[in-house]
Amino acid sequence: MYQLKHNFSLKSNNTFGISAIAKHYLTVDSVEDLIQFFRENNAEKNEKRLFLGAGSNLLFVTDFEGIVIHPEMDGIDLISQNEDIAVIEAGAGVVWDYFVDWCVGNGFGGVENLSLIPGNVGAVPVQNIGAYGIEAESVIAEVKGIDMDTLESKSFNHDECKFGYRTSVFKELLKERFMVTSVVFHLSKHPEFHLEYGALEAEVSKLGGQTLQNIRKAVISIRKSKLPDPSKVGNAGSFFKNPVVSEAVGRALKNSYPDIPVYPAGPGLVKLAAGWLIENAGWKGRSVGKSAVHDKQALVIINKGGATGEEIFELSGMVVKDVLQKFNIELEREVLVIGN
Ligand SMILES: Cc1cc2nc3c(=O)[nH]c(=O)nc-3n(C[C@H](O)[C@H](O)[C@H](O)COP(=O)(O)OP(=O)(O)OC[C@H]3O[C@@H](n4cnc5c(N)ncnc54)[C@H](O)[C@@H]3O)c2cc1C
Image (cartoon, rainbow, N blue to C red):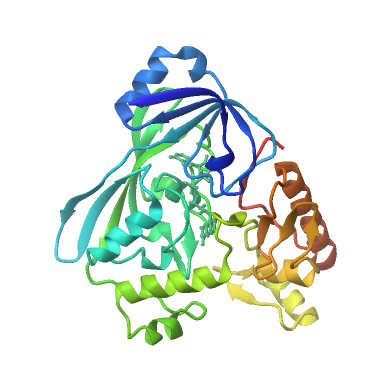
């Protein structure tokens, strides 16, 4: 089934709560209907497109003068399993945290550290979401979808997805061209737990030891204590990526700022904490109009109520400028900015 609406308000379809209008808004719950719609509606096929999941990593700076496509393909299917691995396919419209809960409930490990990340399954490979030392790519075996230019079904194996830090081929070369309709995951029946990140291990032991359930509970409790709930305070999680720089740059910064956190990030590279840079550039808790840098987590920009996308974008630009001036590091936005 599909449904097309015009001049559609996106205010409740983005977690920043920005009032933006989509010229066309299409919801579709099957691959067949998606293809049929665009075969029959050439005018819409030629419009500028935006694939929209739960809108938890987007900032609308202007209205969207094109077609927003919201996939609602549902379902979680156990395709096959052996002693070690469960092969599971989930539709693009499945809420990610529902999927994580389902996996943990069935004893399938690999996604428990990614509990409570907002958004839908369709965006997971696009963003290669990550948290608590795990990235989604570690469990993604295949990504299925439609090439919207040709309306052909295509599938990408893990290597073809070209995953990177919060990125993939779907976010780069195939941006707004390839729409993910389902994702195939390989989950483990004998999971190795990853508790080395932050306070996770301590929280898990407080809950009684290392089980999938306890890890999920611990992650949820830590996240709730640190991050603003988008249903109460508009935000899109981390607004910026953690910068990856050469070891030499990391060493020079460490000499000038002995407290700066620096993590290994592959041969010759280190990762810096964007939140630390923002805080130490003096931005934690500061407001510009109705937008602000969160007072507990400097990596998060919030809508204090009624902020425009432009206002939030402007604030983010000031943060970038000051961090560049102070540390000579250029922050890159993680959220997709639409219309700037
Ligand atoms: C409070 C909060 C905490 C967060 N914490 C984390 C975190 O810990 N780790 C993390 O990685 N992220 C985090 N995020 C960011 C966000 O949850 C993820 O990026 C998530 O995957 C976005 O999913 P979505 O469905 O909302 O995608 P959207 O925001 O709707 O879209 C994001 C991008 O994916 C594209 N896209 C969406 N669906 C499809 C599809 N079916 N096919 C092709 N392209 C598509 C969009 O065009 C856009 O480019 C957080 C966000 C919030 C609000």
